[in-house]
Length: 413
Image (cartoon, rainbow, N blue to C red; front, top):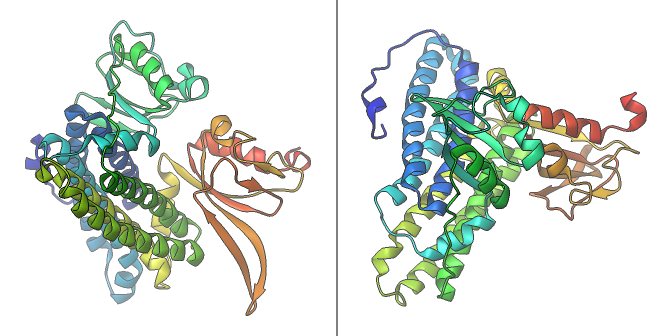
């Protein structure tokens, strides 16, 4: 259990919806990844403390999920069907523990070179914690009315109100004075929204530039490990929803790539240790790399049922669909707004708020099976064409906007 008041909470069995618990665990795990790395970027004890609060909440959720699953298993067939569900529960718990370890790097001042904070802004959007000022223009207004994501590109990813967390609030959620709101988006826009919310300017940290080549390479390795691990988690959930062995195999390859990166990271860190005044100050880097590797392992656990041919229990797919951030698979229609353009030229992320995480090109056939090539983590220059299948992640409203872009105008009538 994480430190804090919730660590003493006694958890007893009570009938709960496994689907709802799994959905909350998924949302909480993804929020934890965002917050833990943001705590490192900002050097913020406050954000790191929020991570440990959420980690405590995850401990309670996983216990409730395990109790419900144990009650549901009545025979060997049930046990086989529910094994992948237990894997998903365990994986979410692993992500939570890893996020807590990352937060402790900040809280316990284990030691982290400034080079880490110089590199992280390129790896994630800014996440800022703000307490809503009573005089704020946002107070007593719902998120649908504010329409922040469309007008500013900044999203409220979570709210803590009187000790209770509301991850991924929706359009009907009303902001109240005293709420702790977590904002994510482009740096400049997030700073402006913070100022309106908190009633004071945002003091953005100024990271130092790395001075040692080997240390810079070690830091770059962690950043790449983070990006690949997050992508692996997204693809793992996609493999479950769409029961896709191809996506599960991609997760397996990404996990192996993270392992290789960690080996290179260790070599570069040891070389850098001989050239810094205080090698002990690099301990935080080692902790960060280890925790990041755990997240990629968790992604593999999520998709393991699909990889081993057990399939995904329907409750897992339903839970992923019920979570606040959805994953969709769409096909580009001929003549649609996405046919013959690039993700950047069409401004897909700006217009919809959805992040395209993989694109599959139509291929031929081999051994009676359709073949295709996946482009993982596509960028603005990625071209889309009729017949391409792509997987994207984001809000429900954004998913609907993206669906319209992928459909031809003739089909939309």
